[in-house]
Length: 345
Ligand SMILES: [Zn+2]
Image (cartoon, rainbow, N blue to C red; front, side, top):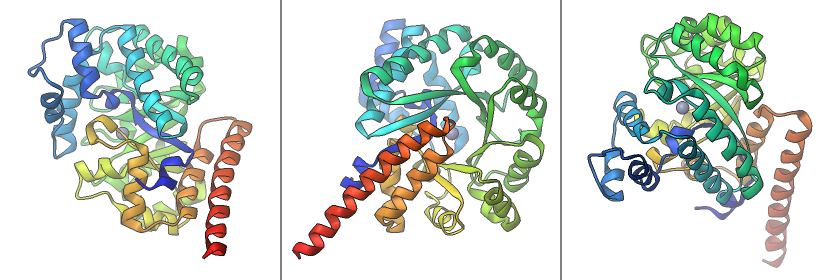
């Protein structure tokens, strides 16, 4: 790991809390809850995290969630992520959660969100990482189920900053959820949606995100560059794209570093994120380091990726400015060290 990347103050905007379930915690939760798993060791559990496509990934992903049952389970899951994030100098994170994946198997919404909320409060106190929650709807479920989940979330409105859309995109276009997202907007939630990589009708779906849904952000969205007019519109609106290179490498033909380069060159607000780090075995620092190596990024370009992320964060202006100042201080100190080394040489 490049030391500059390791120390860089980071902002993560595309992270599924269920995707941070490391094999060690999975086994511990299975024991705690008396859930039978088809393996007994950490190595076997890690080996089970194998897939070569989005659909094979999703099968294992939902299977793993069976160990999450109680409020302390969700608390432990989120607090473990925040401790890891703090160790990588993540300063702020926006965390997706999939309530339908839990309520559908009998775990109440209240249990899920209370566990996560308590972890976020303790994460900030114990580890100094601020975080907010984004409720994701499962797009391969019905729009009615999504609407019911949205209504279920309303008593917890103050604990959730926005809503998103994830799971399998094939045959599940953004417009399927137009009424759900319109209602979410009226309730004061900010809006984002997954636009998965190299899926069928990808650019048409991104266009729907802009014109039908009116998103505030796009998750992934790598295929936007297939259509220059679409890319230009994303630029005009200043929409951030939460790109996840290591995840892309698992479920498509590679980390799409060349697309990240073109996004930077076009001045788009591209950000680097980890998606499901326990499954892809790369947290946000490792993702940044992959892009750094693939594109031979300069320190200024790495700083720019994090500046993009803090600018795109769903935070009040003053909070963003405080993080941006911290980032500039880090960058300035590194430039000063570089200049001193130049003098010495
Ligand atoms: Zn994702």
